[in-house]
Structure formats: structure tokens, C-alpha cells
Length: 115
Image 1 (tube, helix red, strand yellow):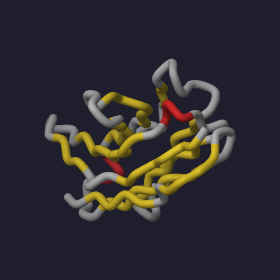
Image 2 (tube, helix red, strand yellow; image 1 turned 90 degrees about the vertical axis):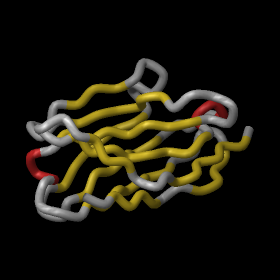
Image 3 (tube, one colour; image 1 turned 90 degrees about the horizontal axis):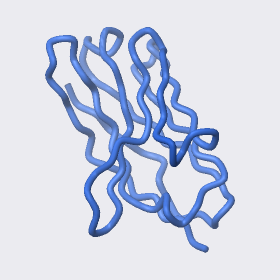
Image 4 (cartoon, one colour; image 1 turned 135 degrees about the vertical axis):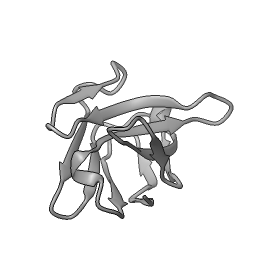
């Protein structure tokens, strides 16, 4: 399994970005997907997840502003980020969780929100 994240960039506070993550391999449909982020000097933190059944869950810090979706026909997962804040700055990673319990990580995409 390989994951390729894209869509990061520099945006002003209050703006929006849409992150994309493309997954290779045949396991996507049966896998749960998630987005994590890591700010400079901080540990990686969970942001949002979507199960293979499309059940979604969000960290309190992004609830109401971010939306995670998936397209099983394209093996893609997205993170729509609205009302961005400077504290949303970091490297965003997508993750794929196999039914067997294994996890794969993408390479990350940088999001920078200026105040």
C-alpha cells in the first residue's frame, strides 16, 4: 500500500484548503482512513477518521470546520478544511488502517495558516 497526500499550501486565517490522499493497492475499500497532523515541535495528533462504512469522527479542535470524505471508486480520501486558524499549521498525514491491524502512512503535505 502506498499513500500520496497533496493539496497543502499557504493560506490566510479564515481560508480553506482541500487535502487529498490517493491510495494504491486493493485494500482501500475495506480499510479505515484517517488524517493526522504534526505541528513544529509537537507530537503527531489525530485530526479525523472515516471508517469503511463511512462513519466519521473528528478531534474537538476541528469539529465543525473540517470534513473528511472518501471516494472508494478512486481510492481517495479528502479533508476539506474551512475557517482555518494559525494553530492548524503543520504537516498533514493520511493513514490507512487494515482490517488485520496494520497501518500505512503517507508522506505528508505542509499546511501553513498565516494570521
